[in-house]
Image (cartoon, rainbow, N blue to C red; front, top):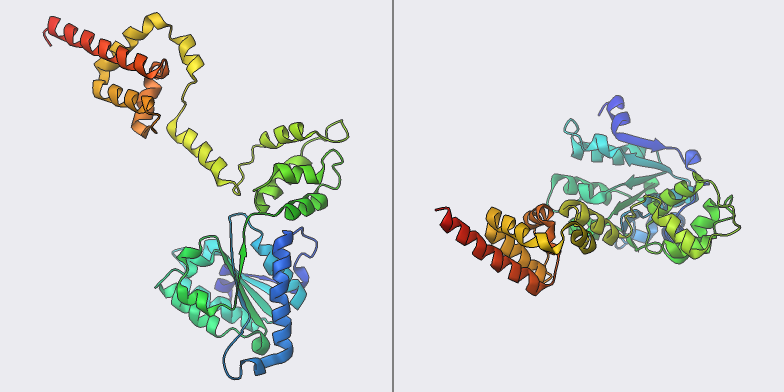
Length: 355
């Protein structure tokens, strides 16, 4: 690759420019200390450690949920061992115009020439998928990593560990697993980020945001700092929870919330029973059932049967229910009675009209 091409696909952050003041996820920074200690000890012992068998080189794999502060791990390592951070620009490295295996080789070569360096490979699974050219190139490059000899270390992360080639996992020295943010993570983060907000108690905010990811917490802090403080000294748990719920933040750390939102969007609006009863008085229901039966008796019957059994509705059935929301009204027996009555009326009218 030319110098210009390298500049397009590789990000180089000198050690002195690594932000030491950034608020990192506490549990991630704590685990990074284990890797830091290993690198420092390996640097002290040197190549003698691997005389009989290669037991360590200087590589780590991070596994965790979406929104984990993986960058915080890499930054903490770089700051403590005096390394530059070298990364691939994913948008460029994965474009059709770029030879991805060549970009990977260039990444490792560039890091070696600019040591001491920490290679930080984001979304590792993209480059380490089983039985691909990228995985073969990556495995070969990892086999040449040696912190004691050339002061080059490697940290890669993924939120999709099943997609990583087993041989890649076998070639990496350490694997660190991160789950959701801990209570201490959240308390420490809010204590550091919300120092100017006396109306917000970090412990209370931490309780309300249980299960949220590090990236979710950052978005919430941004929301709080852009809102004017409340007049009272401390928000009550109920008002705090209401404010968090109204923040318009969809936490990636709680996928069940996102799933509920997506389902509601995909299935469309489903009116409440009270709304249906108000709009469709009992005297009109027989005529409305007759209209639905005339449109599509089979589909009307299927929807009613699924409603009566509390079964999930397909997308087509949801659309049909959106067209005829009055089918929600009444008990199971009442729906079937009206359906049969509408079917008899429809058949009789068809005979009279000669259809």
